[in-house]
Length: 307
Image (cartoon, rainbow, N blue to C red; front, side):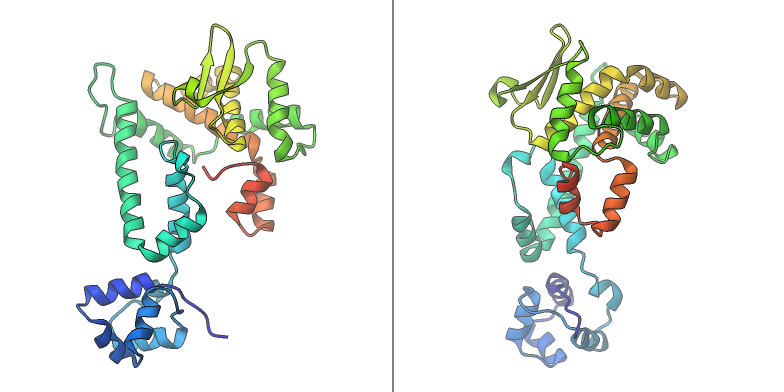
């Protein structure tokens, strides 16, 4: 059976960059212009024999040309639409796939635009106290990124604390299902006098996803969050409250002294902690191998959204 390769967007982009009409390229490949049009719109696969004919007729890197980059593009776009600023749109994977298939260049442009937006957002969020943006290599964002790279994004103390909490809320074998994890974490949080969890209407939260009321010792979570997101935000806030001493020690160990960088690093560690509780490393690794790294199935099994 011939391998089917759906890379019509690459074929169309190569033809256009070469200044060829569909008729001219079709003639070179010994196919009809209408068939070439179907190939370019992924209505027909680019078979291996046709790919070889393309390589003989034109100067192309056949290996890179044959690689289907749509899965990677799908992953990156899913991350974009998981961002809070766009999550309310609830764009389905089918819609993203349609965008990638019909307009891959537009999809990549959207990625570039989002990355530029995120860079500006980071600079504004962690600007210096006198109102000037803290850009450059000494910015809090860059300091934390460098710290994470030096630690290979692994913090044993946080992993151990997350495992201890997982066992406390899910039993010694950590076997509580993803469906029950949120309720288990809420029951566990109720034993701490510093935390009372309340789900609040989105209009009352005024756009915020999570807010901790220090005076009332209440964790307010927006109803706009999906179940997996509620679990994650609850665990993040629990980490900031219950693991504060450990986070301070890690700041000292990794010499994160600047106030803004220290705050960002603590928030990053809290997110790391929450992810480790929801997706214990050993169990997640075993499941990833079992499910052949299927992100949708992994998300369902561990009750985790893509982000």
